[in-house]
Amino acid sequence: MLVNTAKIKDRQYFYPGQYFTFSSIYSEKFQTKQITKFEGNKIFFGEDQYKISEIKTIYASRKGVSIFSKVFLIAGFGYFGLDVINSGTNDLKPIIDGTVLRSSAVLVGLGLALKPFAGFKIEIPTEAKLNIIQVTTN
Image (cartoon, rainbow, N blue to C red; front, side, top):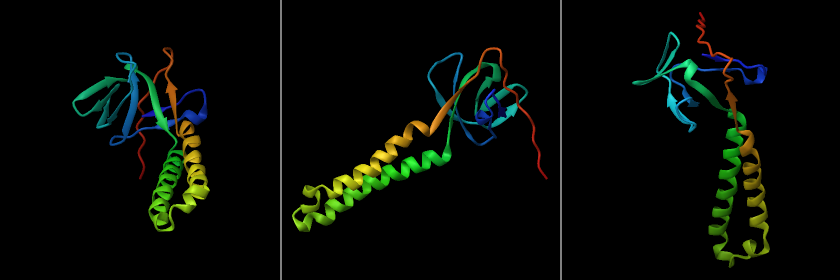
């Protein structure tokens, strides 16, 4: 399935087997389900099926930004935890001096700063249509 809006950067391709995060006309709440197949104008998620016209918003992620955000968060919290354990023999002097807190705070801050850029939503206007296209490669 190809989602193409007026902005070329919002073009997204979805394939069977991928996870699809969306909200429908029935519920404003977003849900994540795995696509099992496309048939006609319907998307199947196991036993559940939705017509393409019932999809209101698609939530997509920017993989690179999402990965960097998670790496910085894990590194910041991990560095703080490991340094607390290692500096236990030095009477917690590095923690009191603030060197550990500054380093881990910078890493955690970078991770949190990247979070809002890790995903975006594509709202499907009522006059627009989603289409399922068949793309084959040799």
